[in-house]
Image 1 (cartoon, helix red, strand yellow):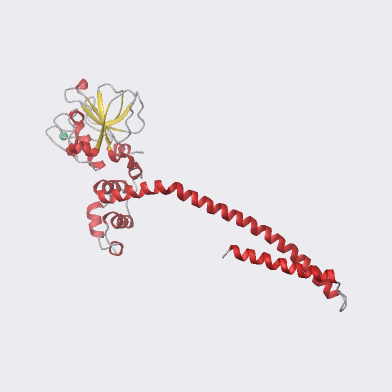
Image 2 (image 1 turned 180 degrees about the vertical axis):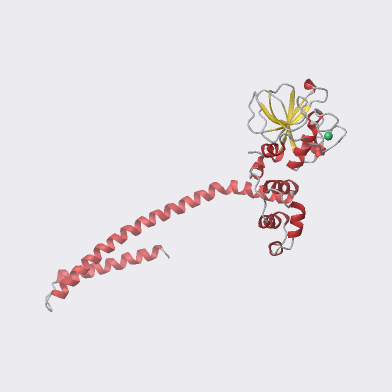
Length: 295
Ligand SMILES: [Ca+2]
């Protein structure tokens, strides 16, 4: 489930007013809140009319969104902002894309669509849609899909240690607990992670680099691991064979020892003596090989 799905469920049926109260509960209010939730500045989409969010992108818009025109083939991902032109009204329209759109079905959550001035889920066709603003961090949906897990004190401590670079021992000694509670008390983990991910560029870049590095070295590491596993399998087989040889020779030796014990003094024939010597030699060799394997 994407962030837009989660938050739509949370706000469903409610009016949203976040900017310009002289124009209450507009589609732009929901789009602004969507930006807030995604950690994207409102300035990326702020214009007189909704359609201008697509037709008049600014530097910030390009920084935070991929700007993609509506074409018959394109299916926008969840979390994108869909923008309608003046075909649907003087101001156009803007809505937040949900999971599950197809080439002919555009699933969004909207405010002020069909004059409904609260949040509703709407199944649109693409009529009048001019394009989409797709958040560039959309590929980080793993972060946004953790659901509404409430952050615990320990989680907050870890997030601060990891993302802010605060000293581990001080964070975990509870030094910053009051600050945590003031800023994020009652927040859900998804929101906290999303906010930090979007606001802390250095941390994010480091993690992205780490993931890239991991993806690059993964094949060679997997190859090494496989080769070592093969070696272990082969050595285990060898050890099994040697164990069997030892058991067989030991049994033979035991039998010969019994024979010696039961033979009157001086009665041991030369071939029996030779066999005992030979077996002892073989046992020593095998033992040397086995211990050699584990050096
Ligand atoms: Ca407003």
